Image 1 (cartoon, rainbow over the protein chains, first blue to last red):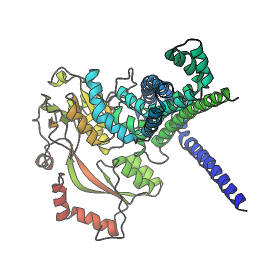
Image 2: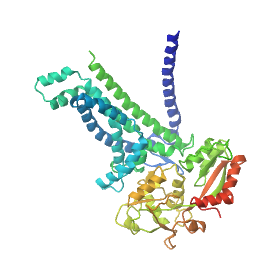
Image 3: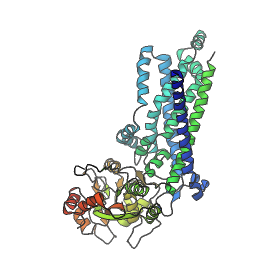
Image 4: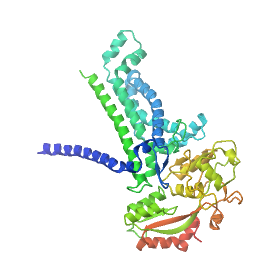
Length: 289
Length: 239
């Protein structure tokens, strides 16, 4: 009886998660889709003007979409090379003792509250970015991207390190036997063998960068122009939702428009995570013997 | 709270629109606003059976601040409008150095965002009033007044419009209603006698005329003791 009882509880808990998740998706669709009766999808996606509190309101999310793109590109460009290099160092070069202490510390960094990262960006990084790049203001997509790079580094390092360590030792031995140096072994054997795991790590990092809100709200600058360069102030999609939702009356046009942005964000992060999942699955199968 | 232990008060401060939205959604009994309620909001409220009732408890002067090193000391409303619509983008066009203007606004959660748009950007009440004007797309919209002030304190090219937050790190500008008027610095005195051009009401909204505990609170706000408190915290009392 006891066994059965526990089993059904676990079953229920699993079911509940699925129900809640489906509920969120249904809510997003139900609240977000009606905006397209007011603003046609074409104008909504490609419109460059966002005036939610004007009469009549205009909803065009192009500036937010491009801003999210810029911030994510900057974050990825910084975090991927550093992350993979760090993972390779931990897995292939560093002694076991160092790895055992450094890796948990890096994973701890993932738990840093994003508002703290935003504060650091605001107080330390933004004046620095402003003076180094001679910008009129340090509140820009570049600053936000750098902060996001720090925030996605832990997950990239942790997952790619796991992938590198999953590469069978025979691969390395064979490489050394052929006279390859350590660097050649890492670059030509280990990283290519772990590539699918590393790709998954990158995708997870990108997913984190796309969805992050508080930091970009604080440091990205919040300008509504379609940004042509990452050094401009901009407002990514998450920041647009956060800075508008408090003012939105339930069921109103702005409320629907913000939910529609949420729906797009959800689809984006879901796609990224699904791809990451697939790739990880492939990595697992590769070394199953 | 000590006098009325059964009353639950939760203060939340995203901005006027949020408060009015909460009143309409029925999640609050009373909200503060730094702008008057919009007709669309009244319509939305009536649709769900809420009847907003307005009480003014104080007045507030909105200052316009720049970095202390900025040589500009006064601006007209029309110049401010041009700066915030993105027509003027360099300080030398308003008598300052040759440097780009970083114009900072609050985000759309804020009552100040809407008040400034109507009274400064669209120049309400002036001969040059133009209802079609909007904030320019290069304007920085920040989530809090403190963040705007700290950016102005750091950035010699920035301009912002805070209230009640003016510190020594930033310099308030004298505001001229039109180019022919004299510049007026924001203060309690100039807001009271109406010479400072960017002043606004500070309001409470309730559903229907307040009764019971809320009426007691409003009565206190309008009493001599309440109005003395208004002066004490840096706002302008009703009389």
